[in-house]
Image 1 (cartoon, rainbow, N blue to C red):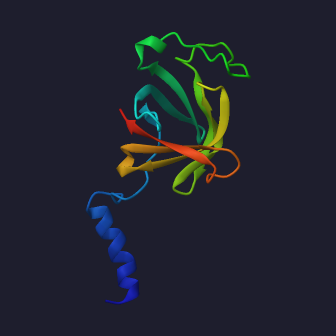
Image 2: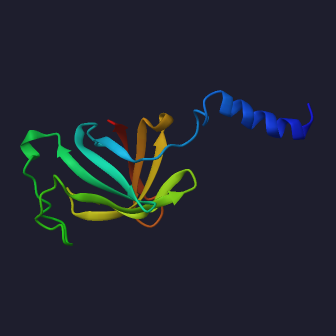
Image 3: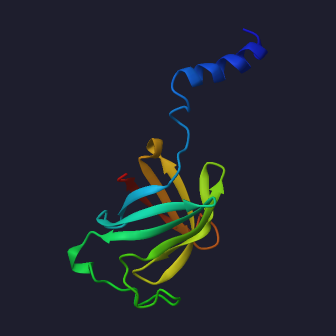
Length: 148
């Protein structure tokens, strides 16, 4: 087959077979169950929303009943001593190729904020959330599971 024919045939076949290919990245917008990368315990439900191309994420519910009334006592900004449930922990994240970057994420356990990279995986059913200082090489990753 010649190259010009392939250039038109492949996109037409992809559209005919259901639109975007299965390997395409999806948006992180939705409700996610956070999983602690160290203990593997389910921690919270976080709702990620998009406004004007920028993502933010808010904790909707803490899954440990003993922490239901937790506050961010170690936070140093306007979130200090505020309830963790309902708190915005993800701010200013923008698309960057297949990933979403450029914002920050708060760890309410230690009150620290980190640069963040979000990477949808497994057809959008999982979200790799990497918090880091300086470069993504210096950080840690949690894998969140899509709830809706």
